Image (cartoon, rainbow, N blue to C red; front, side, top):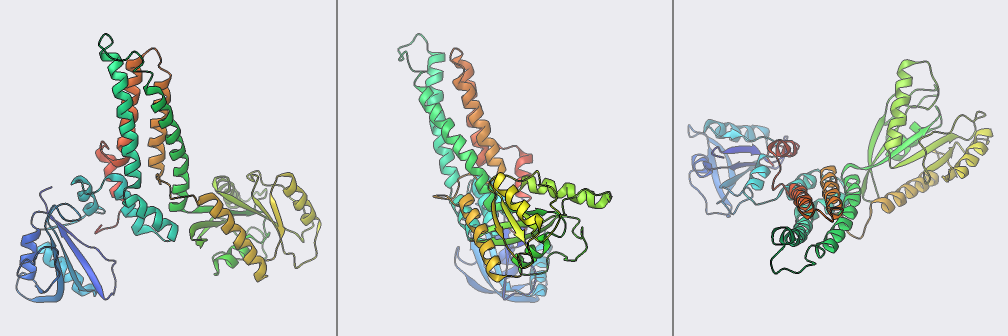
Length: 445
């Protein structure tokens, strides 16, 4: 990396202060060109920034970080200027005039990774911390940035190396003075690792849900009250509500925070047989979203005289809400209660017009989310990528344990398991994987 990059590190728009970052071998020259002199490392200095022609741009705080003691591991600087778009634009233009290059998304953090300041799992923690919308997301991202997954992965790798040494000793020195049971000593180590990796892979799903949001699907026949309930819980008119059946044709997703966790609630098309091609596609999408959701709320118009059909997507533990309890109960209400009992669904009569009913629904949802996502501590693995690599490593070790009479094959499986774990922290990740990960970052980070 011989080029020097720059980018605004704060969001665009009017603000009290904006930060422009620079990193690379020409950082010192760039600071001298704009500020007149290089301030002492890691000490804020008030400077007048000037264009190449000498015209003043702004008074700014300038910080210089000498590599490798910087975020990126190379010479870096920050210009803290007044936050008007014209000021930031002038600083950017002055840096461009010095033949510096605008950074790509995530390039500052990628340089930190490539200089050994962060591993890949920690870099993902940086991205998650920036994107955190809830307290749970913040805590999880902070743990990952602090190296929790990296530390666990290092411990796993150390145990694998220990087991591999035992297997290779048995393969390479069968006639030497090594204990006869040296290969057998590797078995309990590998069995314990398989158990730990399986637990971590399963827990990664919880981490992914904390990051992406707990998915709640509202399903039921047309005019069951799905859109009304969504609007009431969201506190705004997110979905159109009319008396015309089939008003909702597509998935309407509304993010919300419940019990400190991100949740994604979806209003879906009313489930019914229809000859309308557009509505039929909406029903298909509704069923697909509901099948993949963490929790389904089956809404049934309790005042209706028609019973309809039970959604095939329902699972034990889902919730059946018999709506419009402020109206006389019809055959559909009693039918739904019986079906809910048969399917082991929690059931309640509610109305979206009642504040106490909404409070109760919200409390039930919060209880379900906490039960599903809260653990003794944040999960070590938090992404599908982590889960896939943990599963691959566990599969390799199970295969190694089955190679009782072919120790050389068992040793190779252990090596492949170690390589899978190394890819979690990016030690051997191919270039295209790194590019995909860092491209999800924002400019300037």
